[in-house]
Structure formats: structure tokens, C-alpha cells
Image 1: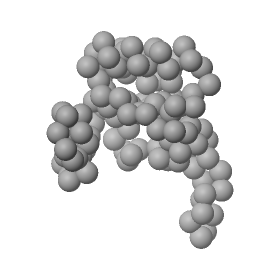
Image 2: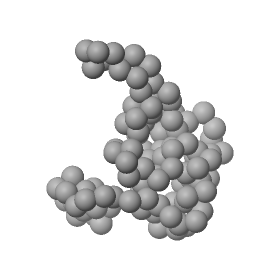
Image 3: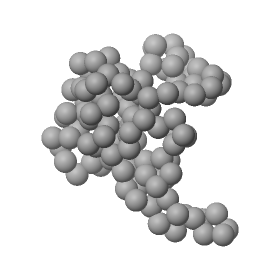
Length: 109
């Protein structure tokens, strides 16, 4: 996930973007500590027709959205966990983007 195109990072900002229908895609960590937030995000995505992807861990999502610090060798040293983020702009068209869009259309990527 390229943070340049990230619309909102964190549950509060993501929920606001979902409620305003300003997002194309939502990524939610399955290990989110608040079940109410998970239900809220799932409900908003379902209600507004926004695609939802679930990832196993908040740490992994935090690294993907750029909330990690690396040492000189490129190894992760510290990651800020993140439960949810949304993408407001997909950016340039690419083969990866086409695969994601096909996945949500029900086609085979």
C-alpha cells in the first residue's frame, strides 16, 4: 500500500472517510482490539459499497502504510500498529491495481 495514495490512517480517520463515501478501498486488521470498531468498519463498507480487505495483523498493516522505522541494513526496528486505513485515490493504473479490482468484481486475477 503506497502511503502517497492513502486517504486516512487509523480507525477514527478511516471511519470518517467511509461515512463520507470518500474511500475506494478499506484495509482492516483482524486483530483489532475493539470489536465495536470492526463491526462499524464492516457495516460502513457494506452500506456504502466500499471494498474491504482484511489483513492478519495490526503490525503488518502499520508497516505497509509507512509507520515503521528501519535500520541502515533495511531491517524493521520499530512498527506503530495500525488497525485500519482507507485508500481514497488508487494513483496510476498498474497491473497490481487491475488484479485488485478484478478480485472485487469476482473475476479471477
